Image (cartoon, rainbow, N blue to C red; front, side, top):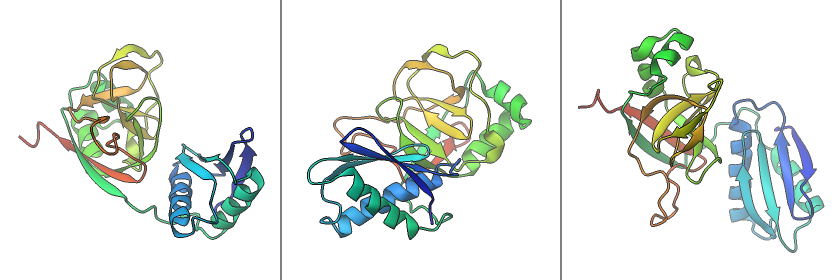
Length: 220
């Protein structure tokens, strides 16, 4: 079972905090299980208007006739039937071409002991998965990559990170969908459109999506 702490968020939401989930797998698995249950038994989940996965949490936004007590009980019952190590289903697959020429690539190579080529090989050698979104429209927090790539954020963030920059921070990888400040270690850049209002849905990287990075220079 998945162990939870349930916290009311005012009168209109419940936050399910997953205990002991450093990788974010269980929170994503719970969010996807809730979405599936809503589709199979809409009456039982009536009033749940949105399900938002986070790093170790799932936020359920409520409307009538749902109450925090009824939704909390439903979430606990669902979590009790889920295995703590159950595999998270893949909802989509995306390939991202990256030009690995980032300003922090050498530093990442030194921090990990892999060198430039080893960092690229590790980043492209293991598929990642979108655990949750945040920070900016279209930004997905990717988990499940090579554990050797766990590096700290930069001690001082940059005031400008270009759109398409591919970075690492802690156990996550991610892609900046637009120019913004940021403190992730940058190893490359992609031209992939992460957020497009003319696309349905607009976000390319949604929770549950598998992401495989490809070395653009190596594929030429």
